[in-house]
Length: 168
Image (tube, rainbow, N blue to C red; front, side):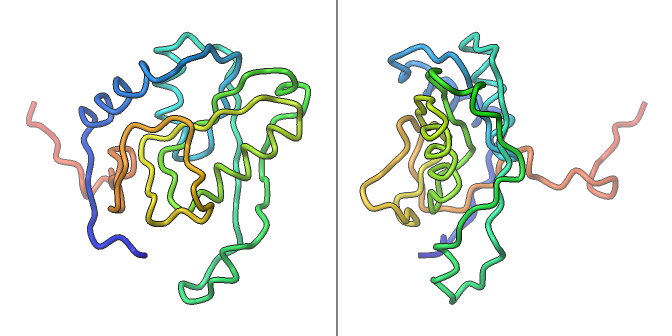
């Protein structure tokens, strides 16, 4: 099901989502794995708030997909960047992204952390249960559910032709 609307968030909205997430954490994490690009900003905000200093990144790509070709949704991910197993082994790791839409990316990362001997928990700002490809699976932690396409403040076009400069 395609979202029928866009929801544009402000930085204040993101702050509220982060503040909603923090009390949910019922354990301490020894590492954080931020999924590029969407997980970098919320991950950084959470790492600062929670005092997590062991910060890692993962970059995942799926083959381009044609909207009507559902078989392409089952394509294997390509890990462009991923931490070496010793950096994850034995660590309680918070895997962070901005949104769980289909769930493919964060699930692929979670499974790879587990395969490396880590103990992953997933965290997103938004969970879209209407696009989820994994049945009843859902993020371990999320701030809100939605059926909309979310536009985060860091995704807004900040090109020179879009910026209004204040007069000095």
